[in-house]
Length: 383
Ligand SMILES: NC(=O)c1ccc[n+]([C@@H]2O[C@H](COP(=O)([O-])OP(=O)(O)OC[C@H]3O[C@@H](n4cnc5c(N)ncnc54)[C@H](O)[C@@H]3O)[C@@H](O)[C@H]2O)c1
Image (cartoon, rainbow, N blue to C red):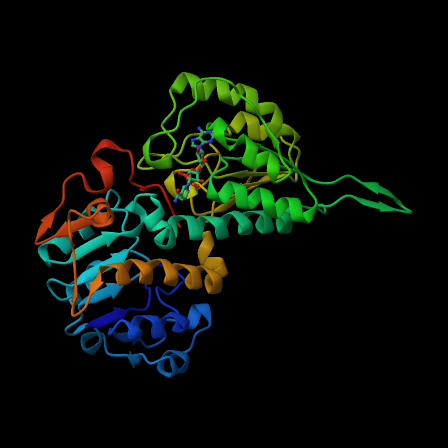
């Protein structure tokens, strides 16, 4: 069965869905791996590395996609790419169906069975396929590095003959996968860290990483499937008042709060930004779903009241080697779970397939991934 790994075409996307290291694993399952020429260049894997691993490299898109039984991608296909995917082929990728209705309709018309990685339920069987987590973890690390780079101060405390330099203060808002990795990274650099999340259950994890948990004992809730529930507007307002002080004290604020399937909540208002010291930095990892900071310009890096606000997209792409390496494991583990001898088995009764399958047999599946009730889709994500 032919599996195709195209070169990603989305603007700024530097990852590749499968790195050469993973090719032998797919081949061992009896799969024939085809890679588009240049697909791995942005993550420093040249065509010869794929060939040595046993893949066939083609620069002709028609030849590449011909008779493909599965296509593995990072970003949703473009309308042009869609035309190349043969009917009844399997597509595994980030898809964000709510943001891409035209692509979803095209996938259905083309009779592609499309599985959205971001819709996989967070059950233990799916842990090795959890691309949201693998990419969020890298984004959390990189957020601290981006903040440190932009800050006109050093992070750790330094005691020198010329006096003592105080350590930088980092405030992490949203302590999911990205936030916890940001805390761990900032800690290694010697920062003083505070962190906040609506889910008080993360308090112990925050503290075990060496940060102080900012407690706001108001209504708090965890939605189904380990995801956060949306908070009421009243809660968010009171939350903003309480957090304003902590934001003003920080040198670097890293926001990672998202609510799957919805616009990101505003945690840092323009007024709060104006209270920060000039030269402080905000890294808004939720920028792709609108941003946690009111002053964030999605996709851009700006300055507001002397505060640098970074809302760039696709942060995992900036560490494309490790992002591709981990993504490859996630996507191939999912594909291999569906590989049964001489066919890919799409069993809609299977919890993983049922939750992630967006189109099948010419139809857009209603309520895929719980998106209809807003519990388990990840429209807002990036990564
Ligand atoms: N296999 C698994 O069981 C599994 C895998 C991955 C993640 N998880 C868990 O799922 C949870 C969410 O992970 P994620 O990183 O994907 O989440 P996410 O990207 O959806 O959100 C990031 C964080 O923002 C928080 N948040 C949302 N609204 C907020 C607000 N108004 N104010 C402050 N914080 C807010 C969320 O609670 C979450 O911790 C974590 O506890 C994580 O450990 C479980």
